[in-house]
Amino acid sequence: MKNEVKIRVLLVDDHPLVLDGIRSRIELDETIEVVGEGRNGEEALKLAVERKPDVVLMDISMPVMNGIESAGRFATELPDIKVLMLTMHDNREYITKVLNAGAKGYILKDVSSHEMIAAIQSVYEGKTYYSSGVTDILLNEGSKKEVPLTEREKTILCLLAEGNSNKHVARELDISVRTVETHRRNIKRKLNLKTSAGLVKYAIENGIVEL
Image (cartoon, rainbow, N blue to C red; front, top):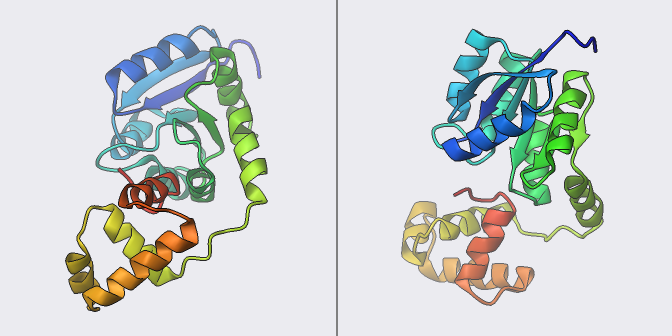
């Protein structure tokens, strides 16, 4: 990469203070130019057409359109623009979804300014980049045996984690309340969880339901 060429970066996060912090960190490098800021995945797509960034540095959890959906849209509609995720989500489920959507990298928000800049430069050059924390998660969790939840159990877990009652879930799926209760017990047993709060935590951490 020639010194006079600046990497055009679009920042996307729904928290203004986070955007300010990211901008101040990456603009320490003279090869990077921030060309715009968006608050959600939909804004990111619109701004990308207008500002023509090389790299989009984007969060996952945002209103209107989340980062995973937006990354997929970039991959199909604006494939020349590289998407790099910058997020606090450090579980394999999110990482896998993001990479499958077409993002070129995944870094955690606690990375150093130096690593954030290195990640931007890497994806700009056509490489993939995972921060060291993400690599550790993929290596450590990749060998773990998947919990064998059935599709019906995943659906019920999703509905329960969203705060729905057994009665509501039963009505939604056209099954009996007793069947929902049986599934609920089986899910807790398979996941080795004791409380409803544990079910919600598991569902969020594993991308079954989003906040």
